[in-house]
Length: 189
Image (tube, rainbow, N blue to C red; front, side, top):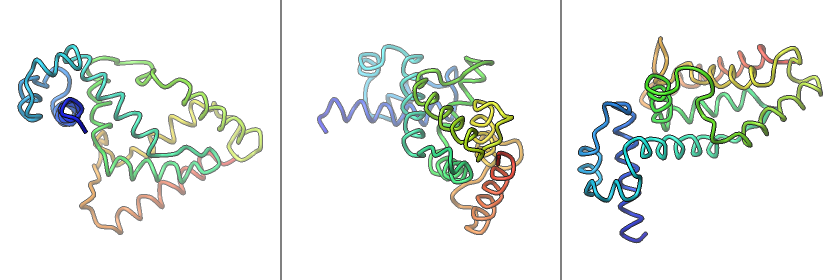
């Protein structure tokens, strides 16, 4: 990796941690630059401003989740369990999404930059509904939203308990099993 790419990546990594911890308004460009061992001029040259840096970080995290957790409408329980695991491994996306909701987009769609991927998921759910494997009385968008939010039950956005990789293995297994069974029962056709 050349120096420019390495610096840009260090800025993105530092910004991810900073935005996840402090939100958009609370994040400081000075801290991001210092953590990345870069100067503010480099940050502004690569990303323009703090708002665009947040947008870049959020999009990269959302893309990483989409690519890390393959969607299979025929296995919604497995998809939910994989999302649970992904949030354990990379809780930053949930934190970033929470800050985006609080500071930017209080209602409506949060991630609008991946419409083709969302449409593919909705089409796959509709196909499973036509095949009788997912309850056809439910709107595919509602199915996707509810399965996703069930998977986030123990995420950093939880009102009850935030799971961490340090939790006992048996606890993670219990949560995955409960999640998969709940999704199976809730959405079966």
